[in-house]
View 1 (cartoon, one colour):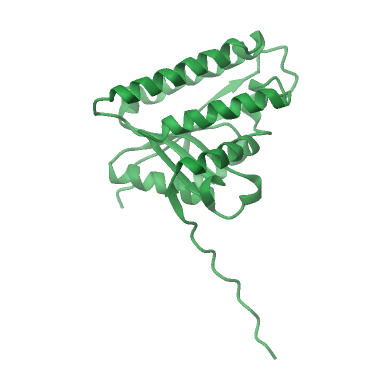
View 2 (tube, helix red, strand yellow):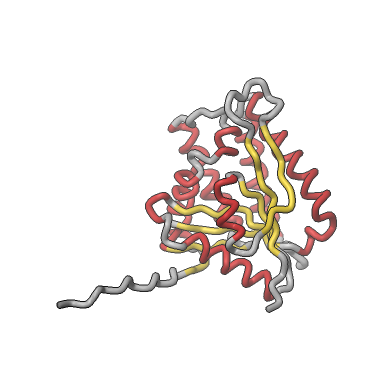
Length: 232
């Protein structure tokens, strides 16, 4: 009689810095992962974007990530099926090339925002102002020396395999090595437990849509979370 087979231990995912060819897959993963995200639904008035808008937004995101990876952390698993973006404090001169690239992103961002509806502009302004106010109150000048998780996404087809957790840990290991705390904003309260399991704790929150009569769904809660330096 054969003995009971034992489950194979999960193999640690291979983490790499994003390559140019990984960018389209990373953009697709971001689009699919945040399709039903509460905050993204609020910013889009609860409507599904048109194919034309998704195409334009996808082109913008590809260029944005190409520029982003020059000076910040951008790690992937399976060539972009999962990815993490993180900002590290800069204490070095910015090159002319980087300034030009930053300018192109700023122009593209302004162009996209200029064609958004008045309601979406109002909602985005609400979110950014609330986040800026609470972040200032919570962190003050300390934020200048903290690592920020700007984005973490896994394509639905690759979820449940530990990729996001491995990517998050890869960033916090770098932050610990540099003696920096790490902070993030979680746009889905369902993910709170996941972040807590990786050392983050909730230090504040904002609520969006609670005083907007045009929003017919429940108010959106965004958790502000921080992970202190692990010196063990």
